[in-house]
Length: 190
Image 1 (cartoon, helix red, strand yellow):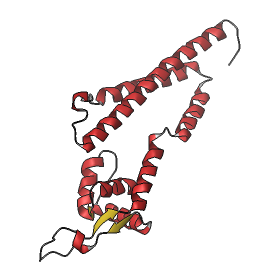
Image 2: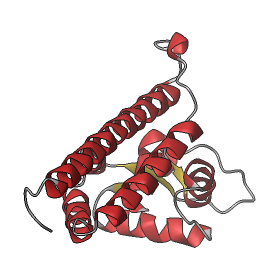
Image 3: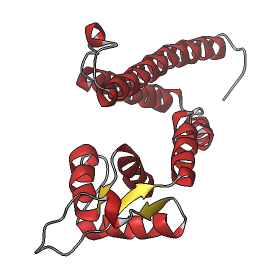
Image 4: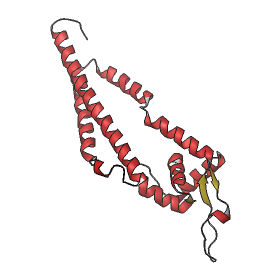
């Protein structure tokens, strides 16, 4: 959650409660945000690491005479750098996840029927994810606001990944069929 909060601060400096509302609106289906206290805790950690700082009072907008001033946060240069670095690391495929998937598949490789069932389920999940994705509006390319532009790019990256996963599933099914044929022909066992 820390980097989601940091991203929102980079996007627009603000105070904790407003960041909590934006976090819920933007990431509610992905991150569980039970209360603003989670955002304040993230801000404390980020400030402790030097990634955000409280804004000087003269930079803030007017709070009004009867209100207690709210601490507004902005990202530091180190925070912006750390966020870009963290994001770049998340954009590449998680090698540990791929390795774990490979080991899990290897366990099922002794049972071709179970492996085929796993591929069918994986295929169904990928197809369902593809169908839930809205179509990209390429006509708006170049004229949409920056947030929409980035959202479109990320959605297209996800679509390309799903297409690659579906191609891999077809490849794996073909390999499974070929292996079964070699085994029936007496090529090798287990």
